[in-house]
Each structure stands twice: as C-alpha cells, then as structure tokens.
Length: 150
Image (cartoon, rainbow, N blue to C red):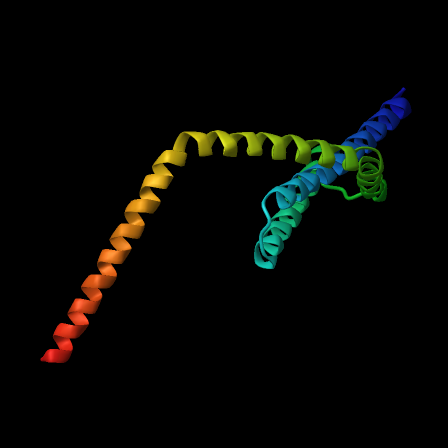
C-alpha cells in the first residue's frame, strides 16, 4: 500500500507540474495580448519579459517547495515543459486571437462612445486653444518690438 501512495503522490506532482507549465504559458499569452493591443518600445518589452521570468522562477520554486519539499526532480521540469508545449499547441493561438478580437472591439466601442460624449468639449477646447495661441503670438510680437525699441 505504501508504494501505491508514493506513486499517487508522484503522479499528482507531475500533474501539478503540467498545470504550472500551462499556466506559465497562459501568463505569457496575456503579455502577448497586451503587446498587440498597446504597442510599446523595446525597453518596456524587455522589462515585461524580465518581470515574467522572475515570476516564473518564483512560481516554479514555490511549486517544488510546496509539492516536493524542495527537491528538484527532472520529471517536474519535464512536466512543466510538457504543460508549456501542450498549452502552446492546443490553446495559445485561439486564446490570443479571441481575446485580441474581443478587446479591440470593446476598446473601439468605448473609444467611439467617449468621442460622442466628449467630442463637443474637445471641439470647444480646440477653438479656444487656437484663439489663445493667436493672442499669445500677438503678445509675443508686441513684447519683442518693445524690447527692440529700448
């Protein structure tokens, strides 16, 4: 009986490893979705990747610490890789494309609603800003002429 319990515990640990691998790949897909929705430069992409890998390190460490008393086992890392691979091959493309589509449609609708709500205020602000800009240029010209007369 003790052997069966040990095998069951190892199988459970392998299952947790596979799930952790899939979750880590899913987390990276969230970053990929964010990058498709909001374009940003190489510095921010590098910072995001760094934070992702720090998070991955912490998650894997906690998994090994909690599930296997801190003993790193090869099949645990194999399970993580298997989870990453399965998620990437089976779900990643669909998860990203569906979420990007939903977010773009939602953000597009929100943007249009905001334009309808705040459009008149922006139009007024643009007109007032243009008028004030012209007045400021006139004042600047008058000050320059006054300085040159001195």
